[in-house]
Length: 175
Image (cartoon, rainbow, N blue to C red; front, top):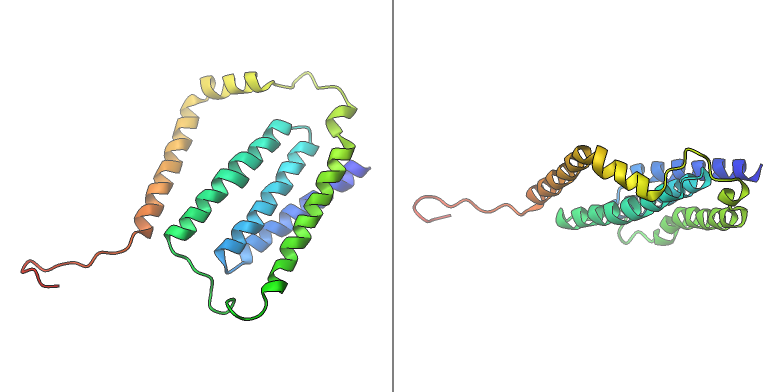
């Protein structure tokens, strides 16, 4: 019963955090809400008996991809809109983040106390990290390389879009 309730709470946190990430004008606030959403998803994966996938969710998405997003925000020099700066609403802007973080921390403590993986034996279809890595880098190596090239192209595209424009000079040397 508690695991089911925890599942629905984490699902609601993930949906609310994602909706808040989509609707924010400030890109840094959107990234913070998206990190909250990724943490909720990682806890959902752990609750469903996939601790390796939960760890990857945190390491790859909440860690590496969010740092990449922040670098892109800095490179494109996206600044907050003028209506959010100096309006005196900075404390009110932190209330949803703090509520979501508090809910995630509570769910994490409950999940740690419940320990869903200790209640039942490991299923027969469980793949060890070694088996998973072997399948990933032997059978699906081409797909992994294609995804890595897509990430490289996205980074090069972001760099190209974010670079400052140079002034064109006329053939006579005058600008």
